[in-house]
Length: 436
Ligand SMILES: [Cu+2]
Image 1: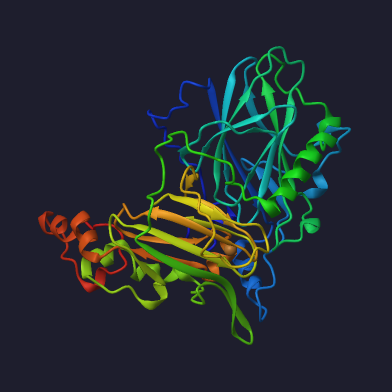
Image 2: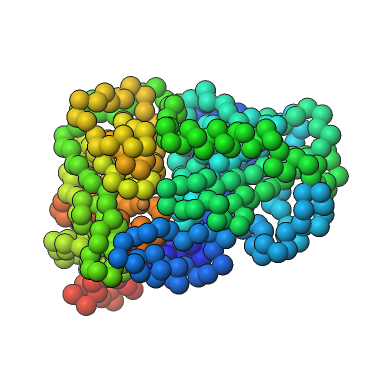
């Protein structure tokens, strides 16, 4: 749910759309869906109130724990020791794998704010999909890093004759806006459970926090300063390329603003709308299609026309932000290191083989450029997926001309034809479903 910060409290679930045309479909034997997220003992509503309480956005709340499919060391006092894993009061998510077979794990980062590094002890990860886009599969590595709202599929090869099970883990990394050291339980653990071993077999306890895995995590953490997670990922389909030229370019600055001496907000282009989602009732697709309304100022609208290619240049003043677009994929055609400053128009763009996805990271005090094709008429939200930033107003609306929307969603016609249907009136504004 994007209503307030509800998803942070658990109002979320995975929806997997199986694609019969997926080029990887015959390349694995089984699959598993793994949701990774941060967890807070305090309700999100309480936390949200603290984020903008100061005269400047001083930082996001500190998570208490990390979860794998809702399993994690929730009450930190109940946690066992690595020498006595059976002493764990918390249960572990089991990821079933068959020896000699290939397992696809669909990893989803459903965090409020955290960047995670996923590792499976002594197994490599072949990355085959990013946010629903099949990749060429040439990246095989020891870890994968996911920002909030990002999804990856990885293939793990089952060992031929395993004599033990293995720990898989996801660790929060230090981001510009949280104090990593303060997180009591930054790592979620799960068990890669081989089918030929007795049920309930724990991996060797000494392999928790293994030195090699720690090195892998440290390496990825260091790289996160220089390389965003998209770097080096390429689509499976070599024809899957951005248009050579953009029809329009929009430049957005990402900022935190001091609004009054006692309140701050997060913003694109100096226009933040705290409680953006609370206003959406009057700017839904329905009312837009019905009433030919002009989107209100608080919608922070970018107007696009169907068929055109649009570039958005992001210059980020502070903090890293996982930026997420609804209803479209985009190509990440330029990214930069942390502290690289604003985008330089003479920089070379990658138009050859950039990844196409719907969530990407813009680094702190740096820049990035995305290109997308406006091919899905509607009214769509584009926002930072750190939920506290969205709550603070870091969002905008991508809007197509109302005539295009009305052509696609002829709600008036549908409703007139409906027997006993209600006539659309101003009073229905904000209703998102055709009443019967
Ligand atoms: Cu953000």
